[in-house]
Amino acid sequence: MPLPPILESEIGHVPERDDRGDWRWQLRNAIRDLEGLERAFVLTAEERDGARRALAGGFPLSITPYYASLADPRDPSCPIRLQCVPRAAESRQVPGDRVDPLGEVAHEVAPRLVRRYPDRVLLLVTDRCSVYCRFCTRSRMVGRGGGTASVDVLEPALGWIAAHPEIRDVIVSGGDPGLLSDARITELLERLRRIEHVDTVRFATRVPVTLPQRVTPGFAEALRVHPSVWVMTHFNHPKELTDEARAAIGRLVDAGLPVMNQTVLLRGVNDDADVIEALCRGLVRARARPYYLLQADPVRGSAHLRTPLHRGIALITALQGRLSGIAMPRFVVDAPGGHGKVTVGPDWKAGERPGVTTIRTPRGTLVDYVDPPRD
Ligand code: SF4
Image (cartoon, rainbow, N blue to C red; front, side):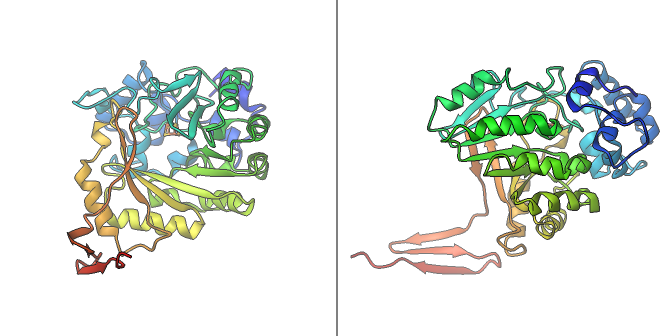
């Protein structure tokens, strides 16, 4: 299948030969139509209908052959399939749904630059992804045709960052900036490196999950152009931690890049303490730090994949004491409307009297913590 021209111009020459180990081959051969889906999966009527709606102007469809190969072709409840195959339920609207759940449009301070916190900004450098995740918070804009922004297009955003010394942290996201060529990543990070007050760049990419072939030594080298790049990735299920994915994480870590993982809590995918435990243990073994377990944002068309908030609280409570500190993610709700992240946890405080707080331990024991005496 021909690659969309806008993508071909961004990623350069695509090998003609059958080379599943080449990330550009994976992109050229991504499933983008109903025929491709029918070849890969035994579709249900609900999925077929969902695909038709997606292709008729809904949230776009793309699945790399690699990611499709992780899914069960016969089981529609497969956790990989739930994340990437459209469903008719995507056209359902429910109370609380929002097109832009985090209020990013309202918080735009320059084209493609969003500021929701005093010290950090979000830079949206592309609208392309190798797989369009059906729960995506930015389904309003990803895959809609904008393509990758050149550094020229990002100039107003970069100028805004340079003019605001209070900005210490830039989150490079999209779409998936992992689809940028090594040269573009280098150019962008070089520009950010020259802004002295930017301490840290967080590079948010799902390629270690959906396209681990992209994590080449050259990719890791490009990311090292800035002295403090943290790779933020997005594994949601232990099935995604394949040999290829773990090797991709290893290449990043071996290059000196810290890898942090954000998992979205998804109904039928990972809303189970055993699944999250296995995922977090696998991530730590692969040297990626479980960072957030995120309550799914109420983005329009994703209600069938969301869980009630109490489910996440019960799950994170069950994991207390089962996972060590380095394997335990924080359970976080991004307050709808762009009001920021709130950490939600078990009800640890069982009582309080002057100088003494009673805490509930993971095993349910009540223990007093006595404060130091006042001077
Ligand atoms: S890779 Fe990220 S931006 Fe792209 S569809 Fe998935 S969640 Fe959305």
